[in-house]
Length: 252
Image (cartoon, rainbow, N blue to C red):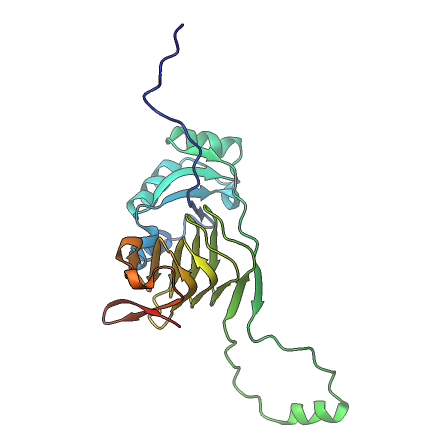
């Protein structure tokens, strides 16, 4: 049989995949909240491929799974597979046209509170008595934690600082995401995508030592690579919200 050149190529590729961990699918607010998140940051969520993590619901029936997948798709995300399923759930996934994927490994993170204090010596009897007699002050709101990432975030990986800033000490590769409810700091090259103010905080900023990003986004406002100012490429920059959009400042 004569080998002919195929009209296609099958190649490996690295893509960022979101995982939707399903804890309480019967919660009446589940899909309203999901739609709100998609609309809040459409550059991140809209039409994003997502795998459904069914580990928390392995003991639940799969009879409503087709309807569940359809509602996730209606929210704006695109389900493509399941992870952490057993035989029953994997069969249910195949029945609705989804793939069965192995769970990916997250980026190595070192999360530490930015307001950590050294341990104190135990109070004396007199100090304890004075403290008990004094009125109790209102509880202070703790400062948000900063997530510190010491290693390169590679294509297909995602870092999510849910409660504060993301501080990255190495490069963010093409196809990688850094997401933070606070600021994003990259003390190296930013080549992937950075999302600051992910919960809608327009005061958040993005800082990086070398701007080569695929996308930068703050509170739903975003600039893709082609929209970044030429003067800022490869430079140390600060990205901020202003006048209903994003401004990129070159920092000397």
